[in-house]
Length: 195
Image 1 (cartoon, rainbow, N blue to C red):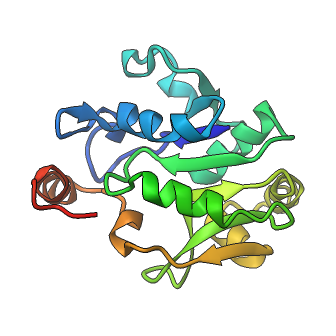
Image 2: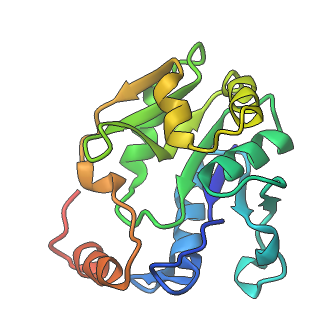
């Protein structure tokens, strides 16, 4: 199963990042199209106040559980929907991701681990916004949030995960500001951008 993490507040961007367009395609639509070949179903995780937004019409939504926000809420909602499947998760604001990155995660999948993640040098640890979460991750997540903790990164850092080095570090970059959005448009939509 696939989940697009779209429940962030986008405060630095100033508008919902799911509505951003890259090369004429909405980022939400692009993320869904990237995930579809690898997932029997693709869902979108959102905050409760995003329900009814026309932007999400046509998508099956997962609603953040009460008391949770951010990426960890999206992963919790995914496992609430189906705790028995692995979830391929991608944030809606990662315009540099291509099929190659998703295939890397799947090729390096180890179901005996809690997750498979890319090593992100800027975090010096696992990238939580583009990862493959195994069913074994669910009980760890439940214990983690029951202790009042909320950082998906911290949970992954302390869990037994498969950690892989991406072929392209740029694929792990998410856009948070109008300037980063403009830079991504120039890079991704330019014919000279190479994978």
